[in-house]
Length: 263
Image 1 (cartoon, helix red, strand yellow):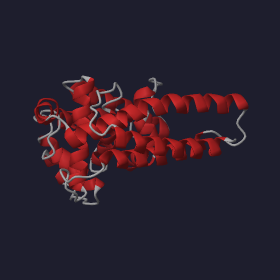
Image 2 (cartoon, rainbow, N blue to C red):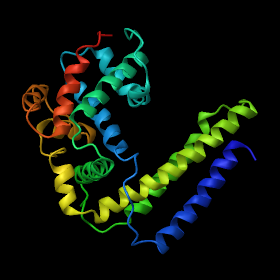
Image 3 (cartoon, rainbow, N blue to C red):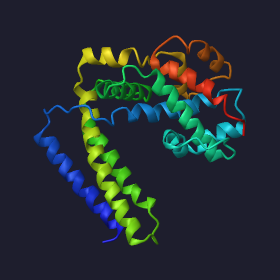
Image 4 (cartoon, helix red, strand yellow):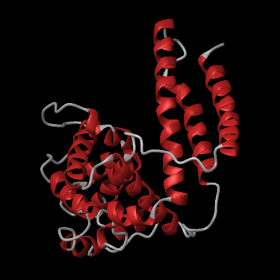
């Protein structure tokens, strides 16, 4: 069995197992995993790139690097500082590191449970921005599982066809570890989104994520194809320092990008 066959077989088997678990444990609550908050982090980094597209202080090449090398932007927090970025990929890594630091500084509270409710709040805003009704009954867990299985199927491309046996074995071990953690996260996010505690949502998410803030609306509009005039960015930035933690983080991240050398 090669790695592609393994990916397809295990993904399909996990899909069936996930459906059986959903039918047998629909009322079971799920504790917040340590990985909670990853949705917020990924959306935040993408929002930073969207706002950067409006920023007149950034060069066209810098904006292009953030829009093109999104994987490097997302992985920036994992990369060590390595001097002055000189290439687009180095720039995206450095930008991701600075933006993630801005989010971490403004993320309060920062417990696993708080991060889980913040993830759910952002998913609800994304749903509303796409024209959906966030409170409408829907099989959220099933949708997340389908997306997760599709992602897993795509991961076979991370190892070249001519990789050594040792490389493939290490890849399979990594997939298994990643899968176990992701299963817990998917269940937790779906449970919180569909039937979370409203009091905890107010405590953990309302002060952190205000979907009406101009900076957030500017980024979300760009995501949905609603590109605003150039003067929308300065006016949104003026409101960025006095609001929810997420908006303050966007404000700080925009300032951090100005510290990087222009490409």
